[in-house]
Length: 200
Image (tube, rainbow, N blue to C red):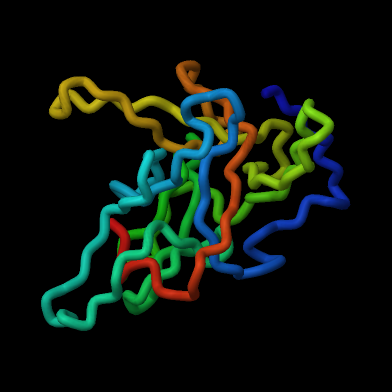
């Protein structure tokens, strides 16, 4: 199934992290692709796509047995992760485009990284029986480029298997081996439960 997107009119671009801090999880949106519906998963201080939402997490032994049950990769809006660790964990997009998050107990973000920039985009399916839906896409401030891509990462230690990291398209984004997504589809978690003590 092919889909087309409505033009991004400036009047309709609501920044998710300023408009709402609603809890959400996300999946890739690209109908007809094997990446469509894969979960956005926290792993290695960045976000990958996975067939299951099993993020990399940590909870110190001093907190046990009161560590929260890991419920997946849960965002508080698009600007932070829904965690219990003091100080929280913020999200960012590096100047080269990698969608990442801060280390626990640290507010450090890479030089030149964007905080914010996630906007709504309406997708109009080609099939008239299907309803339009909204995805999140990235738009760098004062830039003429934007979008979301899934870029392959080969893990030699895992027999050369390929996984995908999420990138926002920035003026400095220069990868040519990526799959352009329609965007990231937000989902409302079934409860308000903390996603994890911290993501790693």
